[in-house]
Length: 365
Image (cartoon, rainbow, N blue to C red; front, side, top):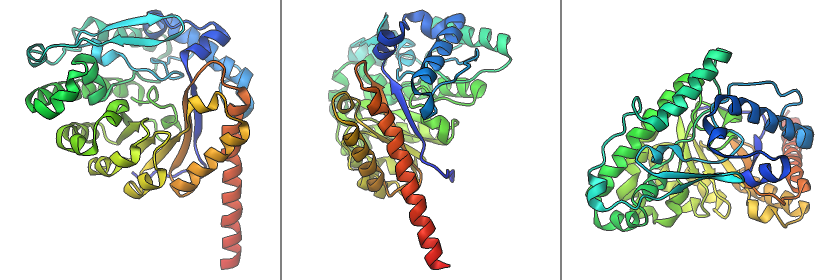
């Protein structure tokens, strides 16, 4: 994967509560599957972003209706595990909450591959996509797809962590079911829209929207050794079947897992706040790294601290080469000046880098 850009991609994603408190957007089930709501709410959100942060390049001044099939302005993921029977609670001011099934071992072993063509949950999304495509003639955006450990914990519950050590047969059965379901979902959506992971991290749209991102939020709960021995094979399969692909790792121990991730040959990795970015870069020298700022810290820190964090992360990643900056799930109460500081810090860093390159070229000439 040799995609290079002449700038550092940067983007932000706000929490559902931020949208609800500032603009009255509600996140009931209709927000996700009703074709009319998909169009109207996404228009409102893009227009609101422009009015608030248009000078940063966010949003659209004249936001026109677009056939966006999934919540590209949120960070969420709930569909895959509903195909296995998980209940989802929708609330007005937050993203969907998946209720863990906590299935017993025998029930897990009895699970079969969901038939997407007949499953009512998936067909509700297909019906929404069909309606949008009929109206607009094309589709864009995508529907978030879970990774193995995230989905397994929702289906099996916390017992899955014990299964990783004591019940490899169950791990294999459930892992392959999740992997094959994820591939079926992502392939169907990407085949219609051209993307499968903008709803995982919107930054990927600026790099290459065709890249699939495997969400491994919960991987920080297990050791790299356990991951390599029990789960890596599923991720290797996902990255092979959905190539080009990479990983979302929002945990603060990305540097511990990056050498194992490297065995799957990812072209991209989300690097969680608190990770040793330099170590991740050493493990993945040619991959795109999306460096994640802390939305919790941004609530209370100064704009100067934001700039310092951005520069420190970029320096650790080795500069501008295949590096992006993102902050995801910023909550209501995050100062606007801190959001602006992210973009201005990246812009300033790029300018200094260009000046240095220009001086080097002048000396060399």
